Length: 226
Image 1: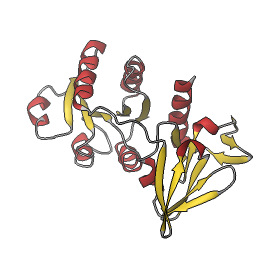
Image 2 (image 1 turned 30 degrees about the horizontal axis):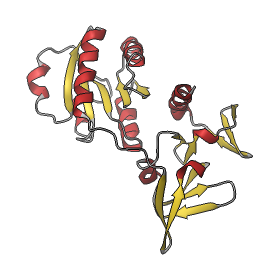
Image 3 (image 1 turned 90 degrees about the vertical axis):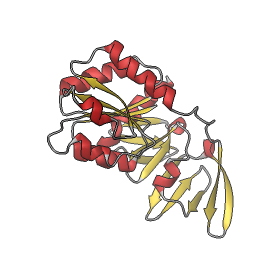
């Protein structure tokens, strides 16, 4: 699962990150202490689970719930025991945890989420993309990286590049897990990364900058491959 933690309390964030690290089902983890930033993250990425604080200083948990896709599971983090009855008004909410949070109760909530999620389909190895009037079959393992070109995207291979009418966000939904966005305008195939230095990724002679907002997620995914 791809998980997003939204909580303004650094201690709670650290605790939830620690708990998540103990759960094999959670393969990617992103953390923010800002409601507004969480909205941007939710618009740019697909998450299977959101651990959402009920009380945020810049935006309420209720307001964020109105934005979260109904296909995304939410576990509310709250100090309000009376939120239980109100939680049934939101399809996304699978469980709610009352602070202070202990791991057994947290894990019980994760189990509820995994039972709700559909069995994942096999990851795509090939993809048909529209290039002008043609549909071109692309071997995804051979793609080095993908860059945004306005409302289009360019797929870079060792010997060529292919432009598609799909946007970067549309492509991201179809890519297997070894692809990672490293900048709002670039996704890389981490299997082709040769080195990382000075916040730059090196792939076949190309240097690709890593945005600070994606660095943690990239490093988390790389560590899972080791």
